[in-house]
Length: 267
Image (tube, rainbow, N blue to C red; front, side):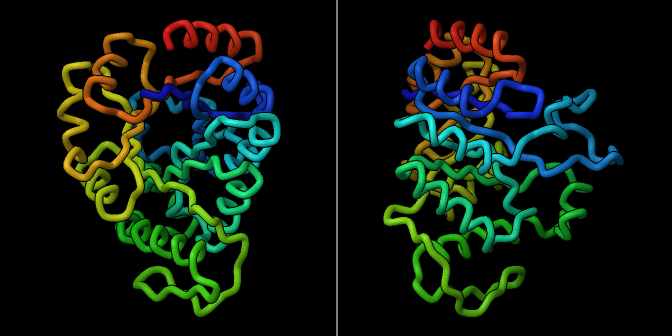
């Protein structure tokens, strides 16, 4: 089983290039970065984890800019979004960004996507929260068309564009990992994904039931944002997970390097 790192990169944390280099040097397989374009001042939608929304949510760098910086100073580290909020993104621009990052990194992108949870944030992008699941389905399908067809077009209920020319076209398209813990997310992974990207559970006894949601499909599973718990890692390895990522709090370089050293000892 592979071990990676999940984190936010912000204007107050260790810079992305230095972070990526440190992650790769310590033998981790992948770096997954979270995305939020902004956080509305209105807090109608409660933070899923409860309590006050952590500061990094509204200070996060654009993940594709940060991962491009990471790509420039690493050679084998996989570069992931955990997750990109595709329902809030223009699909044609996103196809270009992901394919460009995949090209300049030598094919190292793991594209994690999800529906998101902040309804006010979605509305600011013109997305109706009530239809975000169907919108995500169509945007995933449209991405694959844009990456594959010389004259790409798509006609759906929520996504439509006539024939377009867009390059680069990845020789081997990025793997699309579907984020989310619910049965709906697991179903989307089965239908449209190359892998599943749920949050790691906290109780090792719950791991087999979580992975059973996609076991019959053979989809690779990356469980993200895990605490540094040896029992939990053993349970995911035993259950056949492809990868687990450790949750790294964003912070100053000295604190981050110390935490990475602790994680490396666990790995």
